[in-house]
Every structure is written in structure tokens, then in C-alpha cells.
Image 1: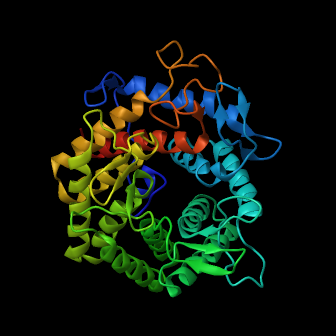
Image 2: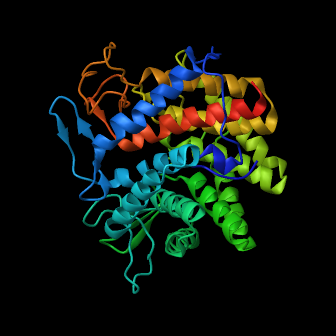
Length: 394
């Protein structure tokens, strides 16, 4: 399979054509029911969160206050859903919406001044938030994804520009962020090396330039050194595991093994996957934060992280054929399905049209919010599962 993150078609998987009556027992739903939920999210929920005048997605929607935040960083991830849906349905309006949201984000959150040594860096917030490697890598993947689907050279140049920021990060001991106010690279933070590996491998494939693969390998080597003795990754301030930075790390090692054949990358992926499986709850979820001593620091779940981890487990299953990884992925996606707000169901605010068919940001409920970036991970997870199982003839 090809290397890719946004869509199952990036893996080279054909769009699956299932008999709708087939029941996906591990998810407890028929194919037709799952496809209907995907359509409702795309066509009934998502448009309510896109500001057509701005050309961007709103931030979080608070159900208790019936308040849509102004557009913000959600526009880094929400367009991924549009690209994945475009691959499946070939609806040009989805691609155009993704282009608008990506351009809106670029104009506000990416450093573009030609005198800046951190040109291509991506802010965490406006007006002068720190620049993070994890955001820059995600922007590379988004812009590269647009280039794949449109051939727009501007998108490719913007992907390469943000990749330059990642090169500078590596020069500064793989620093995860840059403090704009003080002009300094900071050694601690959210060390998401996996997203950088994915971004560089994507560029290697797009450009045919082997230097991008060499850079991915350097980040992979760095990542190997971060793996704890127990197999886990404690990437927040070198102390805490967080589900937000789990899927990309697992995918990165799997991809590096596939690209190089080096067993140490596969061994690292398997060790981490086994660590995850040992800590997966019976409902398919993982707690948000665990410390190096094995204590659950934050038992709350970030639901959108569950399908992202599931996608990574599907890729590892493709490489190893170990049934446990497929089982864990499907269990995580069953949990993901339970977080979708179905009208008339047991979820609170289920009849609010800005909530219905979306996905909660937190479990248990914290602030009763939904957002486009959360839905992106869930729907993509379902699409990856359908096409992966379809390709296997399941």
C-alpha cells in the first residue's frame, strides 16, 4: 500500500462497494446504517459549521450556549474530512470548500514573511502564539493533499515552505516549538515526531526527492530514542502519554518499516501497539493522559483520538496480519460510533441541528461542544475501515 494519512485512497485502497445489508458485527451496525451516518454528518451537520462568507469552519459549538466560535485552528484539520469525502464521492464542492478553508488558515496562522528564519511555522493561536512542529507537519500534509487532488503548484510550494520549518526544528535538537516573542526554540512541549515523519515521507513520494526520506529517517531515529522501556511514548514534556500524539507515532514507525525494511522500526511499532492494547478499555477507548509511572492522570477520553489510533492499528495489521490489531481497531471504532449524536437518541442536545450527527469533544461530557476537527477523525476512521475491509474481501 502507498503511504498516506488523509484518505483510504491515499493508501491505494479502492472505494468499497458493500452490500448495505451486511452487518459489521464488531461495530454493531449494518453497512447501510454506517454509510447513512457518514452522509448525515457530511451533508446535514458539517455545512452548519462552515462560514461561507469567511470561507472557513467555525471553532467549537457550545450546545448549552448555542454559540459558534469564530473560525480558528479547526481549519487545519477539518479540510481533511472534505478531501477524504471528495475521494469517495467526487463532489467538487467538497474540494472547493477544502481549498477555501486551507487558504483561510494559511493567511492567518502560517508565518510567511520572507525575512523570518522560521518561515512556514504554524501558530497555535492568534496573534502571536508559539509555533509548533506538530501543526507545521499537519499543514504540510494538508497542503500536499490538496496538491495531489488539484495539481495546484501553490499548494505544493506552501507544503515545502512549512517543511522548511521542520528542517529548522531538527537543526535545533528536534525542538517541538518556537517561542516567537523571545525568538527561541524550546526543548519541551508536545513532541509529535510521528507527524513530521509522515509529512516528509509524503513529500518524498510527491517530489521523488530522496532527501525527504532521509529527513524522515532522522526524525524516526529521534523517535526511537524517545520510546520508554515499557514500549510507550511519553511525549508531553517528556513525562506524559497523551492520545492526541499516539496515532501518528504508530503510523510513522509502520511507514518507515515499509519504506526501508528496517526491522527496528517495525519492532518499535509493535511494542507501542502492544502497549496500547494492554491499556485499551473494554469500551474501546483509551484515557487521555497517562504518566511514566502508569498512573491515569486524565481519565476523560478525547473521542476524536480513538478513530485516529484505529487507523494506525489498521495499517499495522496490514503489515503484520496480527488479528489483535484489527480487533482493537474495530473496538475503538465501535466506541467512536457511540460518540455520534443521533437525533432522538440518549445524547443530550441531540435535537439541536448544530449538534445532531456530530461527535462530542469529550467523554464524559465536559463542555458539551462539537467541532469540525473532531468529526474529521471519526468519519475518516469509518471510511478507512470500510475500504480496508472491502479490499480484504471481508
